[in-house]
Image (cartoon, rainbow, N blue to C red; front, side):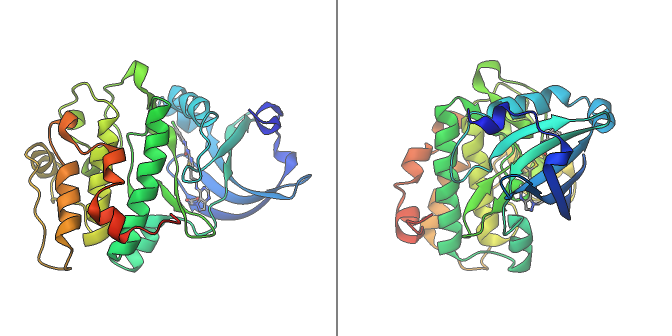
Amino acid sequence: STAAEKKRWTLNDFDIGKPLGRGKFGHVYFSREKKSNHIVALKVLFKSQLKQSQVEHQLRREVEIQSHLRHPNILRLYGYFYDQKRVYLILEYAAKGELYKELQKCKYFSERRAATYVASLARALIYCHGKHVIHRDIKPENLLVGAQGELKIADFGWSVHTFNRRRTMCGTLDYLPPEMVESVEHDANVDIWSLGVLCYEFLYGVPPFEAKEHSDTYRRIIQVDLKFPPKPIVSSAAKDLISQMLVKDSSQRLPLHKLLEHPWIVQYADPSG
Ligand SMILES: O=C(O)Cn1ncc2ncnc(NCCc3cnc(NC(=O)Nc4cccc(Cl)c4)s3)c21
């Protein structure tokens, strides 16, 4: 690990700039480390809220997991520090912000853009799974965009080392695969399901199992009630890929390395990523 991990940081080491966003547990600020002039995003979390929501162990696990991850499509967590009331996460700054805002703005993405994002995410997940880390919370809200338009997976607050698989329910319903909705044992294949849900949402602008009531979303997920709307027009190659990822039996889902060889990815994804 680099010097950044070892140093004892304090708030005085940073110039704090504009707020970038408001999360449930606190705000994120555009910031600059004074000595190096390095731009970072500083996430400020209130200890009181962490304690109240009993997520301290999750936060510790995230910092531990993230300190070992180095990948162009994974947002870096350089380090953390705390004071009396707050915990501060020192994060890589993603200059183009949150992907879901971009998705809301243009409703849905072109096949080229969707395939390029899906390929980047698959490479990042292959890297994570290679280190026995599953993210478990892949959704547009946890995806950020770097200065060159590259995708960054953020917020490993729900990730785990697969040695100690958890049964805790986590994240929004839309992205949960059947085995997590039925809260049975789950493995790295949960991220393949979520990537399939994400690919569908990139192309259609809505997640595949969306429903008014939670109970309806549950049922649609467990039954894999997958339908492709007539509009927008989407290639059959894309539908084929999504259908191979949204499979109830997690062992039958298309493995991530096979995804990178799928005709839709080969045809549409930008090799630059
Ligand atoms: O600020 C925005 O809304 C958008 N934005 N725009 C640009 C930008 N550049 C970098 N980061 C941003 N946001 C922070 C992304 C995160 C990364 N890692 C996290 N981890 C976490 O929150 N963990 C955590 C919290 C509370 C409890 C527990 Cl258990 C775990 S949040 C940015």
